[in-house]
Length: 239
Image (cartoon, rainbow, N blue to C red; front, side, top):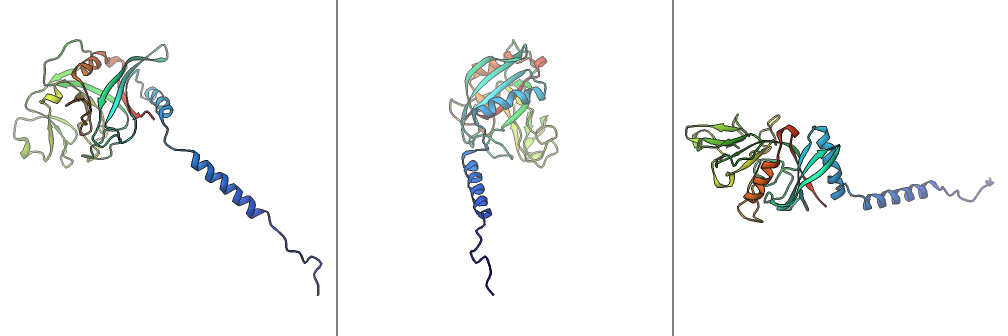
């Protein structure tokens, strides 16, 4: 018996599916999830509004591996962000930015509120933020096994018998410093501790995870911070 239609049927569906897949792959190849300069520049003002901050320290690195960056200070007035300070060179963690755990050598990325100032020197004057002069009994605990992890503790005893790891707050790098409220609400053991803005060892020399700058620039920044404006810090990639 002979069929009336002996010519094989050609389906167009596989061709359409392959064409759709091609354009999907093409779009994936040209789109990058990393938002460069425009992404960070657009995101920090929005996040500042979410946390009701009207004064933002902005630290920009060129990549997640950068050991240096630039610091600026912005203040909101009349609904608009205005530059107050810019072009301040800073040093970052030896492994760049994007901290995930204790001792990884990275500076945290993201937005965090700024805490009080402290230092081994007397109050330099002209500050509106709260300032504490440290003593040789002041420590910041970075022992993840301690219940005092990521806390400032004043202790008169032998710190080596109490903690496996700690920072002495009376030291030259902390002659003047500002606390970053990183990993503090709630404190997560092992996520990272003792993150400050402080004086650098030298220009271009990285930190263990803090943000450092010259003494004169740090003092200038400290004198501009206003607690009534709920100052915070944004750390990200400039592109």
